[in-house]
Image (cartoon, rainbow, N blue to C red):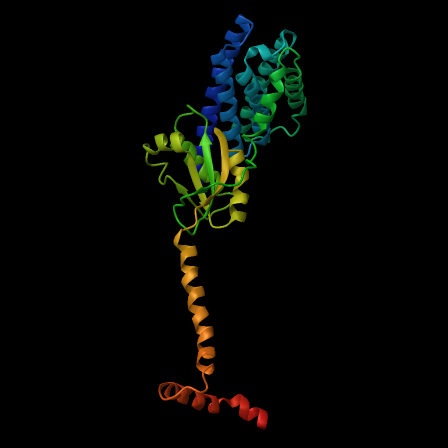
Amino acid sequence: MGSGNDSILDMYLYETNTLLEQLDGILLTAEQADTFSEDSVNEIFRIMHTIKGSSAMMEFSSLMTVAHRIEDMFFIVREKGMDVVPEATRPDLFDMLFQAVDFFRGEIEKVENDEPLSQSIDHIVNKINSLIDKIQGNPSASEAEAPASEESAPASAPEAPAPALDAVNQDYPYGIHVFFDEGSGMENLRAFMLANSIKDYCGDFISSPENAETDPSTADIIADQGFLVWFRTAEERDMAIPAVQNGGSVREYQPVEAAKPAPAPAEEAPAAQASSPAKAAPKADAAPPAAKAAPAAKKAPVKKTAAKKPSKRSTKR
C-alpha cells in the first residue's frame, strides 16, 4: 500500500515539475513577444487545469487553489482572446504568472522534503482575483462578463434535471457523467485516477467503461462518450461529487439517473384488474337469492362456510 502511494507521489512530482518547465518556456517566449499567442493561452489553461486536478487528488490544497484561480482567469482569456486583457494590465499578468511559478516550485520543494505546505496563500490569490476583476471590467470588451457565468459552470454541478441513461447495473441507478478536457490525452488513466479519488468519498460504485486502467482502447471511448460512475443511492452520488469537482482535467460533469425499465408500469395494470373482479365476486353470489337449481348448488358451500365463521358465535357468547 505504501509503495503504491509513493509511486503516485513520484508520478505527481514528475508531472508537475515537467509542466512547470513548460510553463517557464511559454512565459519567456510570451514576454519577448509582449503578449500571449492563442496556443500559449490554451497551454497555460491546460497546465493549470492539470495541476489543479492532480493536486486536489493528492490533497495539496494550496497548489490546487492557486492553479484553479489561474485556470479560471485563462478560461476567460481563452474564450475572448488577449484583447480582453487591457494593455495596462498585461505587465501585471506577466508578473503574477512568474510569481505563481515561483510559488508552485516552492510548494513542490516542500512536498519533496516532506514539509508542510503553505497555509496562507491570500497574497497570490488576491492578486489573481484582482486581475480577473480588471479583465472582466474592461470596457472595450463588453462581452467579458459572459464567460464569467460560463466559467463557473464546469466547477459546479449543472442545475438542469438529471437525464436518464442506461445503467450498467440496475442496482446502481444514480450516476455522474464526466467529460475530460479535449485533447488532454490518456483519458483512460485519468478516469482510473478519478475513480481512485472517488473511493475516498464512497467505496461502493461501478464505472463505465470498465477496466479503464488496463485497457488503453477505452481512452477513445471516454474521450468521445465520457466516463460514467454509478452509485446505489443519490446520497452516495452526492458524497462523491467533490472528488469529481477537484478531478484532474475534468471539463464538466452532470448527475444522471438510470432509465427505469419499461415493463414496470405495465405489470401494475393486470394486478389492478385482478383485484377488481375478486371484490365483485361475493356481491354477484349474494345478489340472486331466488336463483333456482344451478345457483342453489353454488350457494350451498357459501352457507356452510358462513355457519363456520367464529365471529358470529363469539358475538352470541
